[in-house]
Amino acid sequence: KNEVEQSPQNLTAQEGEFITINCSYSVGISALHWLQQHPGGGIVSLFMLSSGKKKHGRLIATINIQEKHSSLHITASHPRDSAVYICAAGGSGNTPLVFGKGTRLSVIA
Amino acid sequence: NAGVTQTPKFQVLKTGQSMTLQCAQDMNHEYMSWYRQDPGMGLRLIHYSVGAGITDQGEVPNGYNVSRSTTEDFPLRLLSAAPSQTSVYFCASSYGRYTEAFFGQGTRLTVV
Image (tube, rainbow over all chains, first blue to last red; front, side):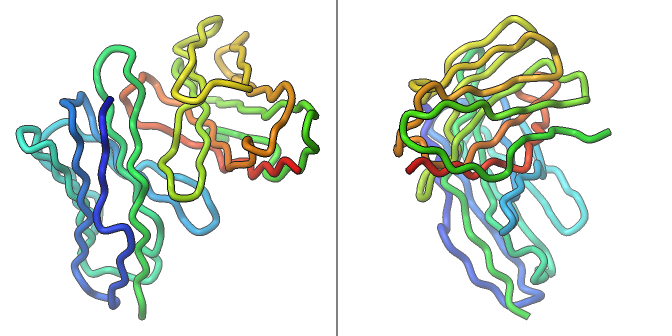
């Protein structure tokens, strides 16, 4: 079974800081997802990637297939970025997505 | 285009009661799934469906039933609620199994 580990578990940053959240997985995958869960509970998909790098606004996601590692970066962080960020690894065939436990980010003005 | 609509948002059940959590999507997605989210744990897959008439078990299926009679709807049934089923439940849909997933707003279920 794929094991997905996220770090850090909790992160507090000052507004404007550059933030990195890490995700490691144990078994080769077909795709990795980054999700955002706001305090109200709703979950939104941020990225799905299988190689390289994707960028959307101030968010950047990268993946290194050989090292089984992905990172989510937030540039110029803002209090509205405060949320739980979750990575999920998807294998091949019938294997289900395996989710990390999430990283709780608080950005202070 | 409503996306994924999940109802109810909150529910309190007594042990032994049954109920159905509703999930509907209007994006013509084939893949739908149900997850539960518990404190300190990642989302865990309960059941999933790859199309109308096809369902399969996920990681934690015991105590739950599903059916998929249409592409749009994927209800989750709790047959006899237990306190261990107290959790937040999310329904999700996607075009394919490993494409972008869209989540419902969640149902916070408490079993007393």
